[in-house]
Image 1 (cartoon, rainbow, N blue to C red):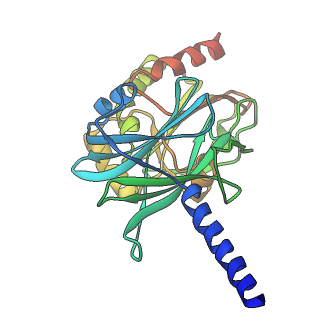
Image 2 (cartoon, helix red, strand yellow):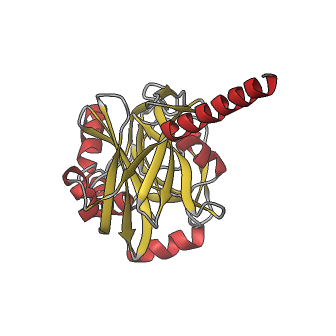
Length: 293
């Protein structure tokens, strides 16, 4: 009787675990094509072979999509987040191949609202069946719905801009503390960032407009190898003062691009925005006009 009872308890536990495991993940498959409201990104950075699926967040105001893409002949993955119908984040993401399971997986942090909020999702993708299994994460534990976590960071409107030194392409160092008394427009970017490249002509227009105003400094900080950056700029004009990002810059700005900041004459961040587009320079122009007036 005792053995039978132990066997039944063990069987019940196994059944419970087996029943819980599938429920920990939601399974979905890709839809071929590009969502209409993301077509402007596809066209702007020349993406092809796109597919996507919806990741159900459990939050009515929030919509997340995950998909595949091809850019410059290379396959990759992307993820986007909409809140109340407004695009908050679109970015390419890495998935790591697991040798034992032949699945590609990763835990993805989706930051938005200038990196002050984040939701996390674990994705497992089976390329052979085009099926996706995912679960939301809350404090490193599985969750049935997306959990919005608030993040404190140094880049917030109204805060003093932290100390930072960056190197110009000629080897000289720029200490941003030395620029106090000037209005500093900062662009955090990367060569591999499509939106970064797409917005350069507009940003150049902005530099030309204010070229006679010595009180405004346009500073680009690129997270790239110096030699590669110099080679890229030979074929792509970018009129901001060009500098190379370092570990401190990466810690401060993070590994998403582009980001735009305006620091006022008192060294305080008066404008901060993640993301960019071909017409983004117009928003910066409005902010500069307010500061000048």
